[in-house]
Length: 55
Image (cartoon, rainbow, N blue to C red):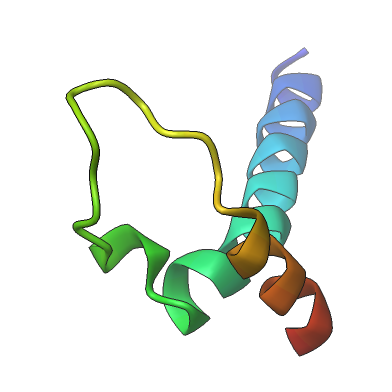
């Protein structure tokens, strides 16, 4: 059961890293300070499109 939990955890982070690494690191999305209001903003479709071209 511990092995299965490890597989699930690694699988989750593998997906997380594949989806967001390019946008976070290459495009600098984590460092972006452009904000409106105090709520969470929807993802930027332009950076998503750019990230898909980078792959």
